[in-house]
Structure formats: C-alpha cells, structure tokens
Image (tube, rainbow, N blue to C red; front, side):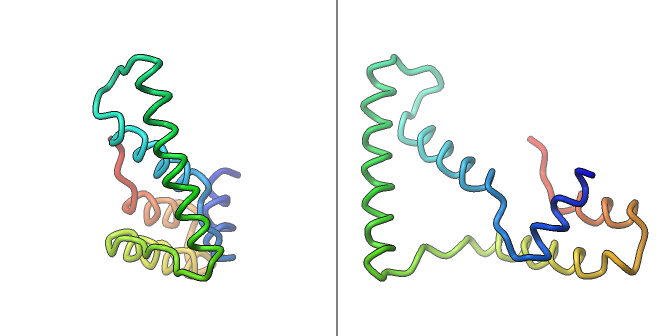
Length: 106
C-alpha cells in the first residue's frame, strides 16, 4: 500500500530519496536562471553544479558535517514522525489526513 511507504520510511528514520533528487533539480534550475536554456548553457551549468556537489561530497568524506536541513523541514519531519508514531492508535484515514496536512502541492 502506498500510504505505508511513508510509514515504513519514517519509522526507520530513512530519508525520502526524492528529497535529494528534488534538491539537486532545484540547484540546477537556480544555476540555469532560465526555464529553457540552450543545450550548451545547460551542459555548462550542469558541469558547475556537479563540480560543486563533488566538492561538498569530498568535504563530507573528509570529516566535515553535512549541511543542516532548514528549520521548516526539520519541523515537518518531526510532525510526520509524531503522526507515524501514532499510526497504531487511529485509522488509516486519520493517518492519511495527518500526513496530508504536511504536504504542499504546487
């Protein structure tokens, strides 16, 4: 069941893979600065983003701390964790309603 995927990830303290993908996508979009770049601009800017990500990874491997999540995301994770911990106490509908209050659809 799809609704249980969030439950399983949260109950084992796993980050959601799409968060990392979305963050990378956002970095690329910000670096490009335009909605529809030429292929050459896209490749040049993508190389810059990858170089920055590689540098951050090497810093992490070298013992530096990873960047903290923004406060609003830490708070959202805490709220979702509370809902997951109460899963057994309510119904599936209550669980889904609680989870849905923590997502913004653009």
